[in-house]
Image (cartoon, rainbow, N blue to C red; front, side):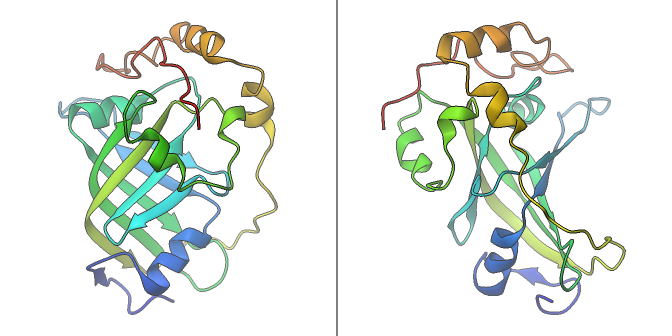
Length: 200
């Protein structure tokens, strides 16, 4: 258990950092500014695709998919919440409420950010952005009602599906999806065509 129930943290370090880095998955939540806009909640997995950059900043790899709601919401307003649950061991839930931004392939920060993810072969997952989040509020809660579940392994389906794509075919794939360049609510999503993958 990380401290007492309902604790607020000033920074991501120590046992808190150890806890979130050990979880095999986490969740992201974003929403547009409009009151009737579509709230988006996404699960994120793949070991090694999340990193703590410093005591107040985290990042994760945003891979190919059939929509880009998180990217669109962050481009509009930056609001995001990340959540980790303990599905094994002592019960715990950690939330990081903050401001995020998508860093795209043509951003000068791309190559340096990518070095924080040495255990992921990004070439097989259609990497399209790196989401960087600056924490504003960091809290944990009890998690007493979260079920105990066993982590077996990451699925290999995503890598198998997108390993055959190059930059051009991946751009074409995204262009063929209704809600990648534009969100469900009509916000600008992933900029297309994709810039070339930078040399590392």
